[in-house]
Image (tube, rainbow over all chains, first blue to last red; front, side):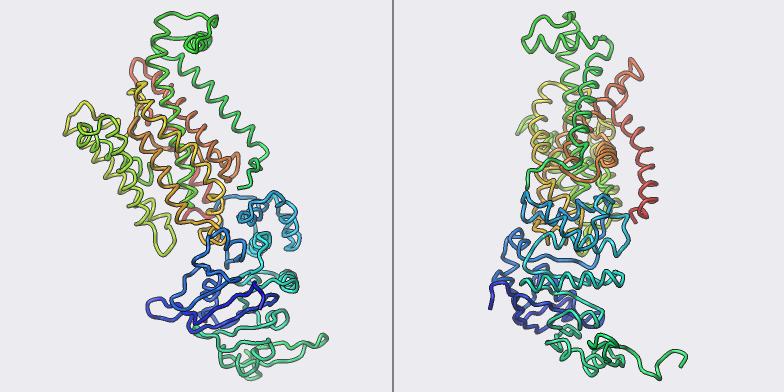
Length: 260
Length: 349
């Protein structure tokens, strides 16, 4: 096992007696792209907040590259893992370049410019450099925030719906970028709603339901007609992509089609 | 901390422009009043006290007026303005809220009440630091009360913060005015002093008591600048980027309250400085705190010294409270600010 592993043991978190996350055991090895999927309220965001150290677990423990996030100084932790929240709302008119440069804060280094420029190029945000962040659209803001996360240059990345508000081409761009990072040894843990993106890009999928990981493994093992039908409570079909051949998850069945 | 210069290209220009403006207003202020002193004579008197002969000429009367009355007054104005300006900028940053003015959120009035209580209750025991100490404790109590009311599930609610601030400010201001009327004690300021402020009480001694406190805040608050920038992204985001937000909140609240309390103990409650100065600077220089904090300190000094010149001269031989002038300017600016914010991103909800 490499040093940069993310480990959870008996992880649980409850609010007012309700288990938001319960009984999660995980070992995520370096170089793994993990997709966290599941219906609304399944505990995906809470799991990511626990793993990243933002929330202290009610029970159990987390280790990021051997560090207990709760007992690690915030700057050290910020050099180990970066976090992309669902949305960053900014009421003050920072330029996008300034926002991305904030990602370098944990490093406090002088060679930030090159890394910042690279992060903005990868996320296709270079042309927003001098634009004021609040004036961008939601998807553009997400990409600038992702550039900030990439500029942080950490071996572990936690991303809550990185593709949620992105158009089709930028979804592909972002997922391919994240996938590329894992090929050079990074760990990416991303909450995803699009099961097809999870199938194509993730090495491993955690399917969550009511606070528990109900299936964990390679996408074809986890995202089956049976598990998805049970957890999401919608009928689906899995068909091969007409030209590329990889499996596509398609919801609906003939008799539920509106107007059929 | 990378030690890079502020990236805003006009940063050095802005700071030196503000400093030049402040120097000019100081010379005007030193020369204005019942005994007029020309700018040349002002420079001559200052050079003479610095031990340099041969500057422009002046009379002994001008020397006495400038050195023992106007100079402490102007210096107190610089201290009060810079303390209020930088405290306003820092509070708006840590609360992520453009309305977090020291007066609007109750700190100033809490400090006024604390100062009055401190003078009445403690001055016999601990001497002239009783006022500033009481002001600090009152300001902290008000700030913590307002903040804890506005804080809900890890978020600071803008409307609640302002509403709680109004309530606390009303109690603090009324309490200070009440004590001033009832105690009828010459050591206390007038009710007007506690609500509108004045630099008329300035003495060298008061400058000496106020200066170290305000200067400490003005020098230390800029050390929080980069972390305050990250907090504007969001408290969660700042935490992800390595900021201990809870600790930063304590640092900023303590330093800002120290600065505000010292100004209130010295010159009463002068409103709007901590609100309009940082906003004006942001319009020119953007929201980054590395430039905003020092520029707000200089800009606050500029505003208060300028307002004080007008307070002393618009109604000669009468003097109007300096807070009247900052409010007459600040109120309309504030209204414009509200409209502008609503136009740009839907207001503060």
